[in-house]
Length: 209
Image (cartoon, rainbow, N blue to C red; front, side, top):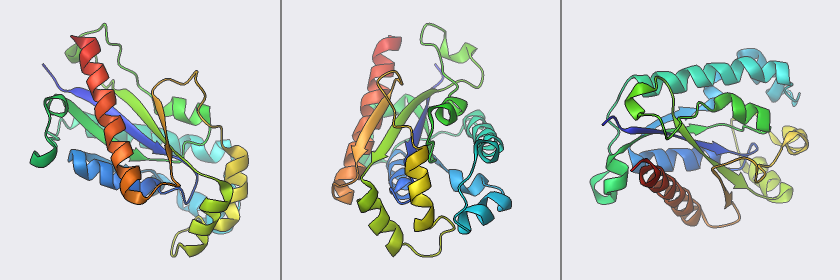
């Protein structure tokens, strides 16, 4: 049987630690990592560097490019087997892609989904995948302090207020979302995120049997 495809979206505002958390989890899973910021146009980057908030029309092409890359990563059929010290029967049966992406609005998150229906055979559904969203949740003041300390990034503290205004926190009607409190120490955040991925993969396998 083909491995179950699982997309992990690590979402949150600038300064919430998306890239760092996503890289750590991807490394533990030995999975492909996609940095959403890499797909911003130069125009978008220039706007953010000037503290000009992006609008929906700025984000749609960016999100579509990210989704295309997600599908390409899965279609490459790379064997992503977790490191031996973390190997479990569950993870042996899954193929992960980990994405760092702000995904501030529900409609943005919906663009990235390409859900696989469990009642359908895995090998009969081309380009589909399951999705777990890890929401890095933190207060404005905490994230502002982090942004002030960050260097050499086009999205600075001046954008944070607009990002919190745009942010639509995932509600119960959005399935498969886990909130990760970023007030915790980094090691705890990494462990919680990795555990959420394993729990989600386990639930998918249990439902498929």
